Length: 513
Image (cartoon, rainbow, N blue to C red; front, side, top):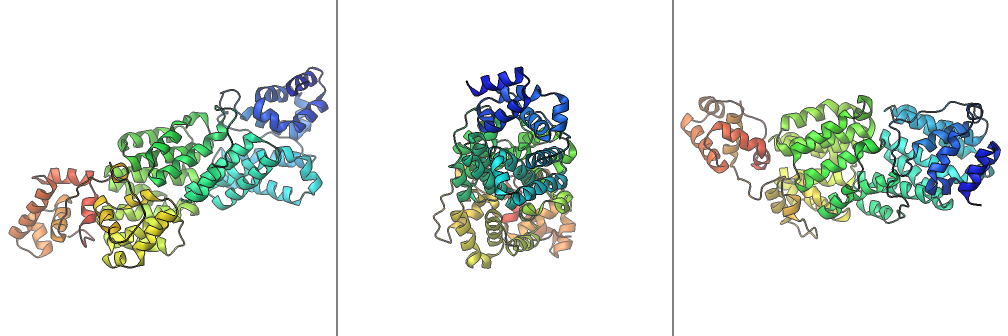
């Protein structure tokens, strides 16, 4: 008799202990291949039985949460209430509470419940753990997701890795797919491409292409490919993403990956900003502004606005969220703030911010970006180990697209100073971010151009710079000529579209006046 036939017969005969035995003994097979039958069986349990047995209540809720045959998860998970009796009862209820809390953006509660469940499992006897071995991978994945969304990447990686081991031991292919993909995702978010690629290679083939367990692996693959400058591989991974309404855990991380693709490979940043806003609007404020979701969405918006030349808006969104960012992305925030400052011509501030990141034990991507930015802002740094360290990190961790931290002409100049094995596909990576030819302004031209763009008149510029009006006007017209414009309004438009022009000018710090 097949598992499905046996389970249906037990349900029809209302042999609930037998139903429990079949589900417990065949959990992996049911969740991998017969989710519809599992959900139907759990739904048939009498309410009084579910109330008295937490494992039934939690399993029913969890079973209904698993997509069945192309259907999608419910938009919110509701924690069942029942009186716990055995280890699995306690773990089921705590895990359900954690899932319900994280889906409402209540990360402290989600992490607390997940940690309590983990501690209870660790304190259990080997025999007690062996009795529930078939469901441990499912539980550990849920704990890991709570930690991931709260921004605790190190502990999340530990749970996902443990979940993978449990899945392999229980021959639970579905959880092996999800946990390996989640391990890869945590590492990819940190710019640790070699380790992420190792986990991507361990992801089994998914049995059901409509299942959401493959999502994290696709996102990780896209992020690794974006870091490497591999547009085709990144595009293929992104093409496998499901719509935001189909998945409730990774929606913000997925949108972050799509935004990074745009800022790296030159799609339409204005359209990407609109898509980002539309995705945010689908979710309650607490879910889109807290934890890892809040951090990644702000970083995505800031970089898109930097690409469009809206530097004020980029700086504003970073400043508004600076104090609430999860620690794992604090350095990434500072790097982005430094990039905005450099693009605005505030070289001293950008230099200070980049230096703060370098001194703060950054992850490889943040460290490489900060080092490269420092080298571009300080000629002495370019000649010192700073540039060499940036290139080493880019090479070791597959961070080709960190090159776009600086303008194309600056990257070309810097990379020519050191022998480097990095092959940056300039036309692909720099296609929309920076033009192939950037006007080179002198220090004086940059100063008067910024002053004019800020609304100062020629006499005001001359007075501030202690030169004659004739000299100030001559310098301004020279700057206009290099930009290919003839008046202030067109110059402002040109600078908004290409803010790196002023950043590339030598020794331009604060605005005059």
